[in-house]
Amino acid sequence: MRRLLPFVALPMALLFGCATILTGTSQNVNISSAPAKARVTIDTRYMGETPVVAELKKGENHTILVEMEGYETAAIAVSKSVNGWWIVGDVVLMSYLFWLGLGIDFATGAIYKLTPDNIDVNLRKTIGASMEGGSLTICVIMNPDPSWVSIGQLKPLKH
Image (tube, rainbow, N blue to C red; front, top):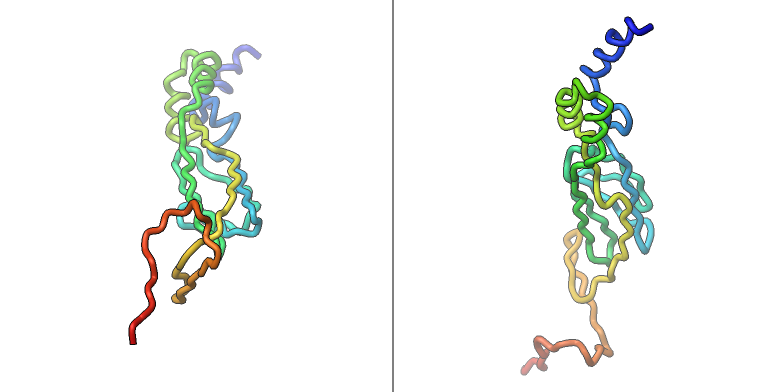
């Protein structure tokens, strides 16, 4: 049995690092919104309506857009960062092949983790004018909040 160990361990070490074996190269990111049923786009690719569970590659940064008509678009950056535990795992479990396992984990992206991995967006209603789909929408507020700062005043037209 002991003679077989190098024949089993060496090919595994050459093909995979610890993080690649144990967690893979992708990570699930949960995306929800209030109100629900908002459109979710990740890196310019439509993913569906909230709530969405997206499987993202860990070796890349991602941009998530959450959109709904009548609401401001929310943009969320999902960033990769090195998960230090996998470096320790490669050192302990693959001591003599440490650099090889670590290199594989970096190359596959498995050494990274994505943050945030739970995204809950509270969409804000659009106030004022907006252009969407080639049409102009104007919102008129009859009773403005007195704390709002006035940036201009409409004056009657002279005929």
